[in-house]
Amino acid sequence: MLTSPTIPLNSFTIKKGKEGQIILYPNKSQDCFYLKQYKLNDQYKLSVCISDNHFPNVIIMMDYWMLYNQLFTN
Image (tube, rainbow, N blue to C red; front, top):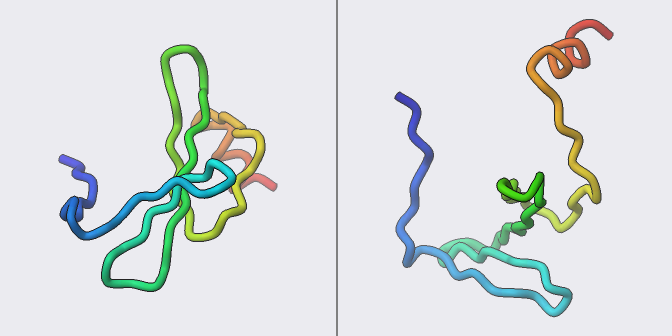
């Protein structure tokens, strides 16, 4: 069974930046992480967490075979 990593809720702070970005600050680190949600359709959103503030404007959705072909057949 797969499980996702967990951290205690009191080990970080989340703030909204001046430009609307969402920033996660770990309490014991100088590093911060940026969060963004993309609306995939009316029922689904994709949440992305990265260590810099450079998000793509568009998400490219691929099925398994499209990804496989792009990685291993070029």
